Image 1 (cartoon, helix red, strand yellow):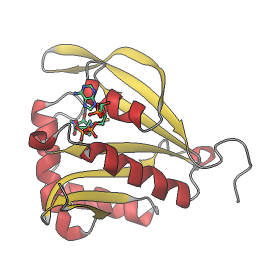
Image 2 (spheres, helix red, strand yellow):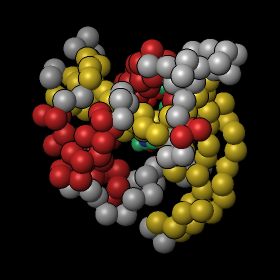
Image 3 (cartoon, rainbow, N blue to C red):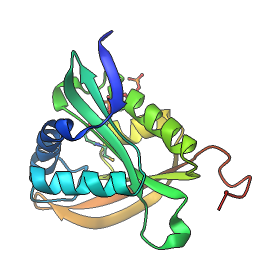
Length: 176
Ligand SMILES: CC(C)(COP(=O)(O)OP(=O)(O)OC[C@H]1O[C@@H](n2cnc3c(N)ncnc32)[C@H](O)[C@@H]1OP(=O)(O)O)[C@@H](O)C(=O)NCCC(=O)NCCS
């Protein structure tokens, strides 16, 4: 794993990210999307995140993109502007090797550097032990569960809310 690199995402990474997310949409319950977005839509989302000044990273092994993580607006109303929601996805073949944790740690550090104060994970499926576990390892606390708010693959699904303070959190007032 010495060749693992975590680096900012570029447009050239988006075809690989699109494929990783497509698998998660088709076969997983972490995301509540039902139809995989195509490259054009993933590019539109990437551009919107870049325009908003949000961090977006990929994990690459020997130059191949195997995962990604980004932060985006938690909710659009302006009083939420110091709070971000994070996403992290890996290729299934490389789960549980510490890559999700490395991606999330980098995302947290960069979000702190950009002045954000809270990070929220909205985790699809309360049975998603991998996601709950990696967030806990990265300092997130359990906020609670919204039971049965999703319906995918013929069954009701919960969402799990986890949250972590960034930087000074609520101990100081933000600049601006
Ligand atoms: C969630 C995900 C990003 C985690 O990444 P990962 O590289 O597999 O996780 P890591 O190896 O970094 O695990 C870090 C810690 O999280 C916990 N963890 C990870 N996977 C776990 C699992 N399946 N069960 C229980 N705990 C788990 C462990 O505490 C682990 O530390 P340890 O291996 O030293 O015990 C990855 O599994 C994934 O892409 N899953 C599918 C998509 C998804 O659920 N994304 C999250 C959307 S909110």
